[in-house]
Image (cartoon, rainbow, N blue to C red; front, side, top):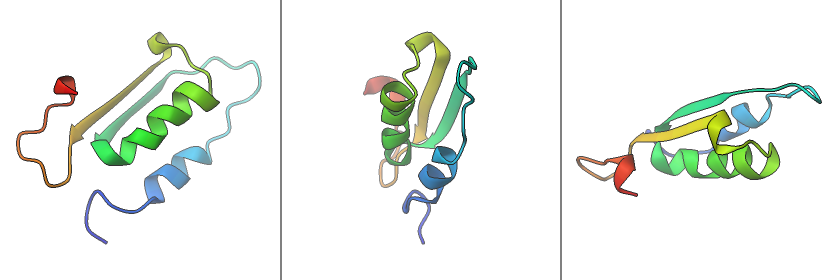
Length: 71
């Protein structure tokens, strides 16, 4: 499987169980397309505030000189 494809990362991360009432900070970095569903998971399913997570796409499959800040 080519880098930046598949759903192994998403499936593994979603297996993490956050105990009820526990405060967490989530830091995720990787291929931008792979992180998109995980960004939604952190925001929508875990319900974390923006200050409680950082999700950064450091590279994007097929895109030279990708900069996540440009998105």
